[in-house]
Amino acid sequence: MATVNTLDLDEKVRALYRLVAQEPHGSYHFEMGRDLARRLGYPAGLLDRVPAGAVESFAGVGYFLDLAALGEGERVIDLGSGSGTDSFCAAEQVTASGRVVGVDFTPAQLDKARRLAEAGGFDQVEFREGRIESLPAEDAGFDCAISNGVINLAAVKERVFAEAARVLRPGGRLVLADIVTEQPLAEAIVCDAGLWASCIGGAAHETTYRQAIENAGLRIKELRGNVYEFLSGQARRASARYGVKSISLLAVKPD
Image 1 (cartoon, helix red, strand yellow):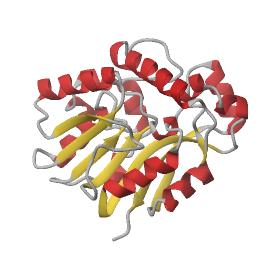
Image 2: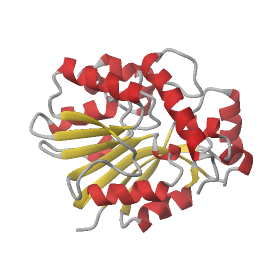
Image 3: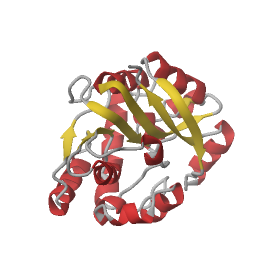
């Protein structure tokens, strides 16, 4: 799906999301924080129960926890957990008897999420350093895999979905929000690691994205569009030209 320089991409993603963790009130292509989360559909009461320091660095693109329908005692893995907003929300829903593992490769995000988990007493949450294309997790160890606005950053999305399928138990769910396109992106955009890091350049065509999920052995059960807009003029122009948009979806691993 990509011709971007992956080493350059990794460097730019780490640099950008280090700032997201450490300078959440800075200026970015995308909106962040509690107001964004509320507009996307996160219940205020749920956000009140997770660390404010995580919510201030929230940079998701949609809401999906209603699709996840997490239950008490379930095991959840968060692909690209960032500062931990979705991991902490999931922990609230699976309660102390459940387990949540967040995976991220940006040290500043991991450091922040771990500090917040310890300070907030989220003993059922663990943050692991790793890549979503090669998850540091056991086979069939989770009931649900979640991800928010991250898979578009991966150069080889097929690997991400294959890994999600690997770590899910039979009958487990993949539930995510992400950025996709209605028209294939121009090569100049796809090759721009800076636009990838800002969630534009790596957005796959929606049909290709869905096919990659199905090819991993997962079956899409529900897909919906989200009301989401980028902030910068460059990102808005790309969105208008190529139909860049946010979706949330639920897929299931067959029994």
